[in-house]
Length: 191
Image (cartoon, rainbow, N blue to C red):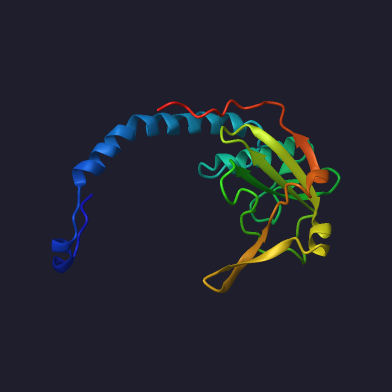
């Protein structure tokens, strides 16, 4: 693919297509293998999804939803709902999943609304290790989160975008409902 630059910019922009092409070719076998593995994982996870279509290649989200579905003997629901899992007891659980320990792992993805009709009854916060193995699952009562003002506004460039939930790892220990049983081997690999 060629980049079309206006004549004025063309002279002042230095491009190194050879370096980009080399990087592309260096990574192509790895990306091909990664994609093939994702397709394989998606196929296996589909057996646990009770017929819900697993969109895209969002492995982190899929894992979180399916772990919560299994833990609470629930069913995955259609994307038109504010929640992800429905239980036989009538719980509507919104699942937020994060992987790794980088900055921001304790913050949920956007939550469009936290009160009103159709809101979940519970929030499950799922944390995965860097290698995708399960670390912990927390379960919060949605009403309690509202009462204790745990949902905060997410503003982008000064404008309201959505709400978010922030996990407080030390104060939220009582809400842990599952701790992973597999200890990952996450030692840094030598270069």
